[in-house]
Length: 84
Image (cartoon, rainbow, N blue to C red; front, side, top):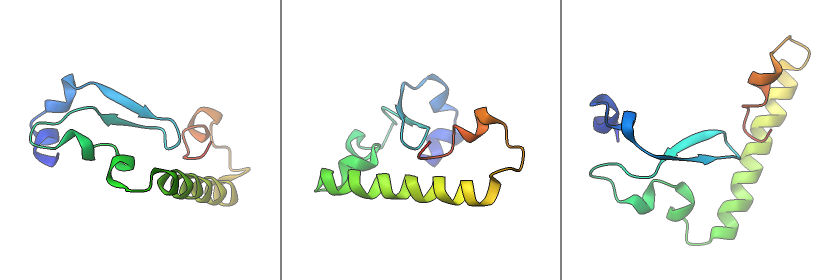
């Protein structure tokens, strides 16, 4: 993936949005098995992945709130924090 990024191959890629973490995940990447581009596909127990992902996103959100609440962060930026 690093090679693809450095070569600009992601400029034309199609992406799927991960709404929990607010990131775009490429649907394909030359030389990378498509099944591992979405982290959920690397877990045997998909329910456990969902549970852990939600906890991680909540941890990000809680830390963001504790650290930046009332500091004048633009609401559009705040909405991009995982878990929000």
